[in-house]
Amino acid sequence: LDRRDAAVSKASFRSTPVVAAKASGATVTDVDGNTFLDFTAGIGTVNVGHAPAEVADAIRQQAEDLIHLCAIVGTYEPYIALA
Image (cartoon, rainbow, N blue to C red; front, side):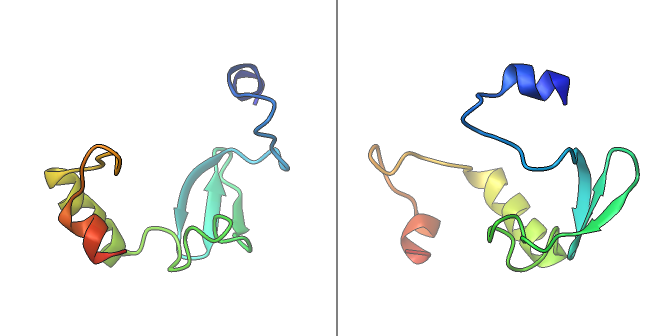
């Protein structure tokens, strides 16, 4: 946590001393092996739970082709399909 506090802007505060190591479904496990229920679901970014196989496979497949292209510079099919 000291390293995080030294490296990350103070504008990005942390509300808990949890250092996550992995997550699955609705649980998060920290670097000390403690497991927590993630009642915030990554603040809404993981509404399908952590690491569902279908989502991980889709991410892996897309990452093999293209991870990101700035929408100001150009566009790509998944960006249009999901708009």
